[in-house]
Amino acid sequence: MKHWLMKSEPSVFGIEDLAKAPKRTSGWDGVRNYQVRNMLRDEFAAGDLAFFYHSSCPEPGIVGVMEVVRAGYPDGTALDPKHPAHDPAATRDAPRWYQVDVRLERRFPRTITLDELRAHERGALRGLRVLQRGNRLSITPIEPAHWRFISSLI
DNA sequence: GCCAACGTTGGC
DNA sequence: GCCAACGTTGGC
Image (cartoon, rainbow, N blue to C red; front, side, top):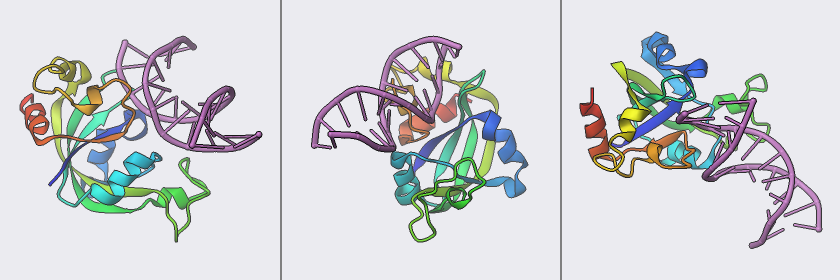
């Protein structure tokens, strides 16, 4: 079982939206970065756990835990001409982009802020991708020790 | 709104 | 294959 950190802008899709979704489950779609695409397509498995991270907002940080309930499959938004993430180069036979489905497992009573994570940058959270300069991936793998430590902050 | 740090595109 | 121009991400 792998662990992940998945970023989303709450003004677009936040943890509240996931909490309100049927069965607290939603597709994680719209990813248009090849490195992240490869993770979604090849590495995600049902049963994996992921932190939900709010980005580009007043209080960036981790707000809850999700379980992956469906491994990678073609991202339908790429085929939808009306969708903002539509990709004219994607076809049903050559989908190009992938998504997974996630279910909200736990909503934290507070945000584990980026500042709080950064306070352990040179200690328990050394090497955490989301703290590294220039990291622009919307999904990153999390080492089990980092996962445990971050979980213990709540 | 600014800007650093990327990734992508396309001409050559 | 190189690389300049452009677009995007995301914290501040």
